[in-house]
Image 1 (tube, rainbow over the protein chains, first blue to last red):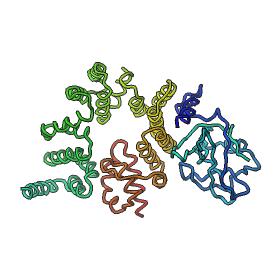
Image 2: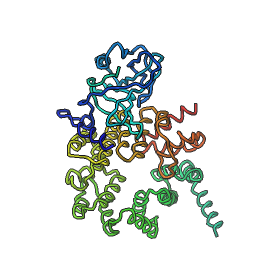
Image 3: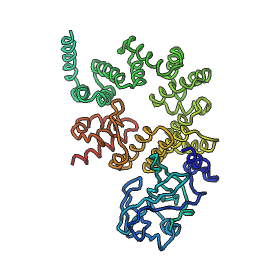
Image 4: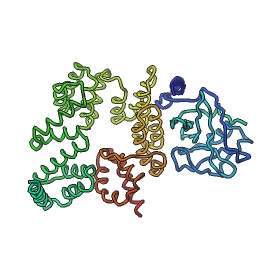
Length: 151
Length: 318
């Protein structure tokens, strides 16, 4: 917990942007590799979500999905980001059968499961994640760079 | 003896109902169902233009119910406002409780600061400011802050902070008031505080809580729900859960609040009790019976949450 706190609050000050939430928390400076434990599908997809639930457990809008095999995450993020969003959108991960999966990254021995990525109308990019062992929730500013899926 | 008192009370109440069946009666009947949810109905009675005997009865019941539900500052304020109705002995009991809560602040300091706090307004706050500056007691500041906040003296508090930012080391107090008075200035304040040195977990939790309040104030309830929830990652998970859930309700996501969190019975706190009744007990009947109280709560300042609850319950019924 101490380490995570330190990581989050050491690197959260972004200069030049006069917004409290920008200054509070950020993951932009760190690369992260995501793992998917679910092995039921040959391919997984990054999809636009139905925007029903705030904390990211939603069905996929299957017409707006990108294969993780065929396209790297950054390009997929940028495709969504390039569309000028009029209201918040969320992106999540799904199997070929449409089952939602929650990739995780590891940091200092802890697992952080991604619930969703959130894009706000001003192109701000966030990730919602949960550290399950401690039931801790994070909503962190991030960027489209630095995220990749472990092959 | 008990029966005689009961008879007198009943006769007294019958007499009152005759003069205002729609207000006092409703509150009085609600008491048999829920003393907590009778409070907003008695408050409503007090604000209506009622005969003196009805006002007096409502004040007495409210004072008793505030005490019963641990709403001590409310009891203190109503005891001051209607000092001719609430006896000195009753008021002394409240001060005894407050002296316990705000230890080590002395009785003398509490009462003196209270006298100044109840008369303070945006044009007249120098005395209470000086009193706080002379004492520099964190617990005394907390007491005065709560009294002024409950009196909705946000502008007065704002001016006090503008005059002296060193009265408290926690950003919570100034942040809350600044967001209330002017959300954009509140965000600026948060932005400045965020860059000042290393933070302990309590401060991180408070800053994220304030961000939640800021986004709620500008109507971004989904974002607000997320910051509130994250505040609980660092400290005070109960506060985080309730506020996050409130923001979910305000954003039209009541069911998600029930799916994400569990709620226990909170007999002294209306918001938490509503979540318990809706999410855990699923007591439709009871919720229908307290609808008038929810409506009264919805008409108060900051009552948007209760208005949303009422709308959701109407959909639930149909």
